[in-house]
Image (tube, rainbow, N blue to C red; front, side):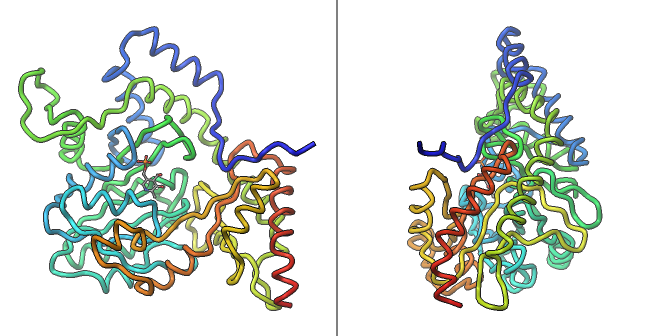
Length: 385
Ligand SMILES: Cc1ncc(COP(=O)(O)O)c(C=O)c1O
């Protein structure tokens, strides 16, 4: 009998979530109710940020955070080409241009030196992404921003639970940092997002713009600025509060699964005899990853599409993750991007494969994924040796 499929991701949802959602349904107040401020307060405390604004998605958070720091028409925003497309798109929503710079080959985050080389007279903001939950080098970006008078918005959509070497949780440095709560994230509300920040005036602006431009003390009839509908419902906030209650356990479970993978795949990792799998970089220098995905880079010459097919054939989901943003057809056509512009990103993006990764993953499931991936790689290794 075929073994059950191992999915790429699986949220942890239990009785607490059911109870929390039912309570909201019974209360009759499904939006703009008491859970909104409660979720914001608890989330801000969790990442040691003074304030937070809940929104309908991480993308909405990136959009309003960039508006709040003053990004507008004709500005440039320096960001990573190795990210989910939303981080670059958010700049375009405001008529700004996302300017890409290459990534660090180890952490896979935006390289501060490459970002510095991309600064121009039009640069308005830096938008580093904590990719795969590994902290971006914020002290370096903070120095760069101070030297050129730039704003910072952090894309922390994948990084809940990560901590910088100086002990500050990702999202707690003061400039706007954006989290995402899609179903595959460390904490989920189905869809949702959060901006954490220190500046009360920016919070007021984001709170207003997520709610059609209404000021807190205004009734239905006047709107003093352009706004959007980026609200997060009380149902989603209740889910978020319940998920916060189990966040420590879920993060610990993700770290446990990552350690199991590291052990199970050690034999296939790079060795002096020949190129092997590249595993996610270990925590270094005091930075701590908030585990989100387990992404390996296949050795050069291994057919990734074929690997995905071979794994699918034995009931294991996997996904190329992430494609380079500048090489997506929309970005190529709009900005004339071509292969070769960001060689580190392109090499990593061509070989990256996300394996099944979720808190409830068992040792047996990890072993099965490792064995099947190993079976795909074995012929290649034999050829190399
Ligand atoms: C790095 C990154 N940025 C932005 C987003 C956008 O978040 P959302 O899907 O909640 O809009 C995501 C989530 O998928 C992400 O991984």
